[in-house]
Each structure stands twice: as C-alpha cells, then as structure tokens.
Length: 430
Image (cartoon, rainbow, N blue to C red):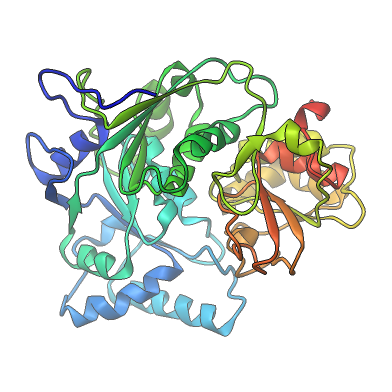
C-alpha cells in the first residue's frame, strides 16, 4: 500500500472526470461541491418515500420521464400489506407522471440488474438510485450512487443533484485467479483490507491486468460490494469489454472516460491474486474475511444456503452453481434457496435446464427478486441458525433474527456447502 500519489499536472481520477462532465466544469477536486446533471434516476420500493416530498416541493412533473426507471424488486409479489401499499404508491405515481419505464411484477428484476442488462446506465453517466448498491453500475465506467428519498425527490423535479467530489482509493490488481477462485473472493479480500469504513464517502477505482481480464458479470460483483466499504461509488473504466456489452443495449449517448495517467489518489492498494484461495466473510461483518480453507477445517454446519442477490445472481453465477449441483443432492436438514436477479435470467435458466438441476437436487428455485438477502420477504432465518450466502452483507439481523450467523462466499462455494451441509471448498467439486 502506498500513500497519496499525484502528478505534476494535477490529472483527474475516473470519478472526478465523470463529475466534471456532469457539472459542466473542466476540472473538479476532492471536497468540491458540484451540481451534477443526472443521466439516470432509479427507484424501487424505497422510492415510495420519495413521492410525498416530490409533491411537497410543488414539482408539477418529473424533469425527464425517459430518464427515470422504477423497479419492483424487494417484495415480489407483495408479501405483506405494507409492501402492497408501497407498490400501489409507485404504480399511481408512474401513471400520474407518465413514466414508461416501470418494471412491475411479471417483468421485474433486482433494480441494479435491470439497469445493467437493459442499458439504462452507460459509460460516463452520473446515475443515482434509492438503494445503496447502486454502486454496482460503476462497472459500466459510470459514477453510480445511492441517495435518500428526499434527495431523489429533488432529482425527479430538477434532474440535478449537489454532490461532494470524493477522494479516490485506487485498487490495483495483478495475477491470475486460480480454479474455483472468483471475483467474489477478490472483492472479499479487498474488503478485508479496506474494512467497512475505510472508504467512507470515497470513490474506489479498480485497475490492473486482473480487472481488465474480467468479464462484465465479475465487474458488477466487485463494484457492487464497494458499498460495503462505505464508498460513495466504485468504478472500473470502460474498455473494449464494456463497450461490447453495452453498445447493443445503450439507451442514451455514452461518454466513456479514463483516469489521467497523473491522476491524484488518496492511496493505492496493490493486490496480487496469484495463489489466492477462495475467501469467506464470517459473522458479523463483511470485512471479517478469512481464507475459506481455514473455515472449512472448523466444520461449520449450516441450516440454509442462499445463491442470489444483486451481487451474485446473474446467469453465470447460476451456471456455476448448477455445474456443482448436477447429480448431487442438498444435504439433509439444509434449505437451499436459489433466486435469479431478473426475469430475463430466470427465462435463460429455464431454457438452459438450470432450474431442473437445482430443483432435482432439492433446492428451491424462486422468482427473480432480492429474496432472502435483506431478511424481509422469504428465507428468513430463525435465532441461532447459520446461512451460507452469495449476498453482500452479514451484519446482525440482516437475514432475519439478529442471533443468526451469515457467511458470505462465492456462488460456487454456496453450492458446495449445500451438498456438504457445512461450509465447503468448491474446488473439491471442480
């Protein structure tokens, strides 16, 4: 790890360049307050709390209906009366404001995933959403950040938002990930180094040959869990891989940028993944990270396994889990819940026969939603139960009872754990 680095010409980081463009400025510096023009605003159920402030501000209409996306994703279909009310508020608001991009039940998906797979966020964007994991879209080479409902009300009315320019931590990654070692393991290792408050209101910029070799699905996973570092945003510069993914689906003009060679970083963290084993975040924090083989030796039994969430429920994750589960059975006494990130992914899993693989093994394959991740809809844990999860958080009470224990790991590791009935190393099945 090195200290602050800067060049003689005062170059800008990736986040600074994007915020300068959004603010119509030639240059911005960390700590500066700017007024950025928002390229895309997203709301899910939390966005229902935005409707009241929006009307109280006296705003007659949304600034640009084509730049607003609403996605129902946490309680799908509504599982409580409260959730049904939230859904009704959003449906009514979309109708009144003539908002055409509403992902209602039936074409739903986790909000960040539908933004990614349908091209709503593109390189160079300033995107905001009413969910902390909006950071995931930084994999597009965009500044994507979660904001509160009152801030979102102002964005809906004006299309602009005050932001403080964050300082940037650079994470430079070298080496080749070994068999059974994934981007989830990499970001868990980074979390173990930076910790949950180490990047508070900062930008985390991922660079290096390892990052450049990753497909988009892995980049989404890495930027997603930048949220757990306390970061305002996590970014990977747009390159040929990004453009190949987004060009056919982009909903608006792209403005790809890269950090200047002499950009100034608060610090640089250098990581070599050569020989790195799979990792696991143990209770009760995403930064309580240990090598998975060490935890395997402790024989930690599990009651539930979850393969899902905005972090790891894309088709590639489901394929990896199914590859391990094929011909195997979920261990007696273990509940294995598999939830795809979007309706499109569900359909693809159906087409490829993945759903059959999971259900024949004894797993439950659900519709696309946040599912068990947030402890509010399905798969809720009882006191003292243990869950192995491919999601992003394991704080007390995250998936139900505060006494429950959650271990965070890769999709492959969740499948291996479901088979063994205790935390297991996926490399044993590859």
